[in-house]
Image 1 (cartoon, rainbow, N blue to C red):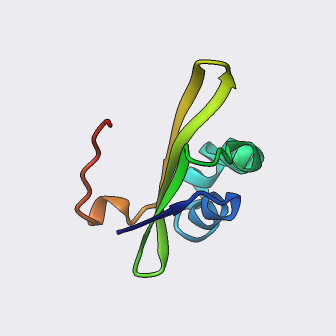
Image 2: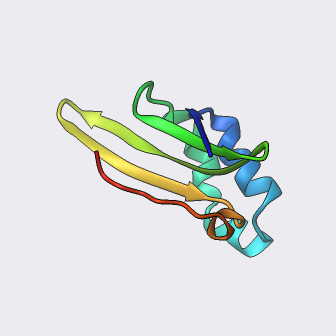
Image 3: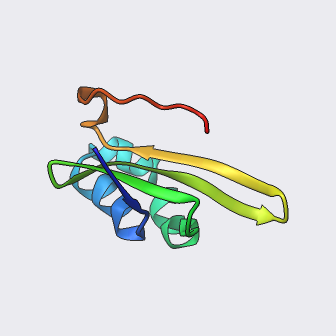
Length: 86
C-alpha cells in the first residue's frame, strides 16, 4: 500500500466506485464534507493497485482538539492492513 496526502476526490472515488447504493446513502455525508477533511500532515489515503482503498485523518476543530475520521472502500477487507497508533 502506498500512502498519499488526502484529496477530496479520494472519498468520492470510494463512494461512487466501490460502494453499493445503500452504503452510498449511509455515507453520503462524507461526500458533503470531503473538502473540509483536507488537513496537510493529518489526512492520508491508502492506494493499492491504483485504487483508493481507504482515507483517514484528523480534522482539527480548535487548538489541541481534533476529530478522527476513516472511510474505507469495499475492497479494504480483502487486503492485509495493519493499523497502529503513532
